[in-house]
Length: 158
Image 1: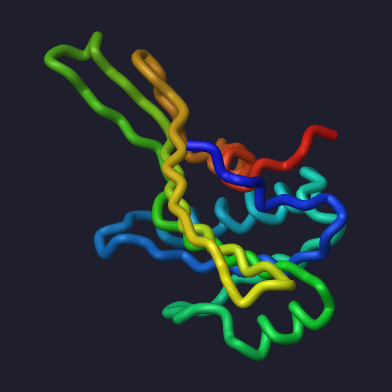
Image 2: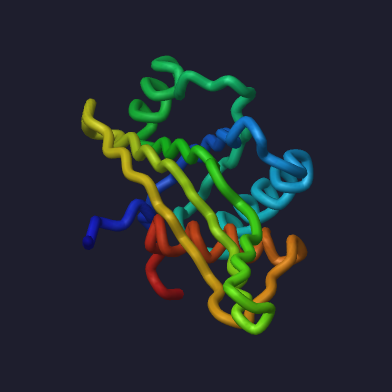
């Protein structure tokens, strides 16, 4: 399903992110560090926006405050809220060890607040990379986060 890109090269944006891990999530600190690194690197390198500030919201976050939205809209800036529900390697073992399938999975909830409109749009992204015979570790999680953000936000090619 096609959707209009969130990235807008000539716009300024405030990007807020919040972890929304499941109750039994392992290695939370390492995943949050990887998510933060991936998010920061993506917005520095992708030219998604002319400028973007990236800030982690405290948990639990009930959303972006109306004050932040009003100020951003008054300045013509976008606000993007990213909830990170999953970031990590997965492994499935079939009937034998020869049937190993590994991947990295990233699940994001994205909400875009547009400056000139009281409306917003929200969607979920489930990004996966891997396949049969692939085993992935945690070292590449920041890069996987960047790839998932590129798929979700659709920056224009440089």
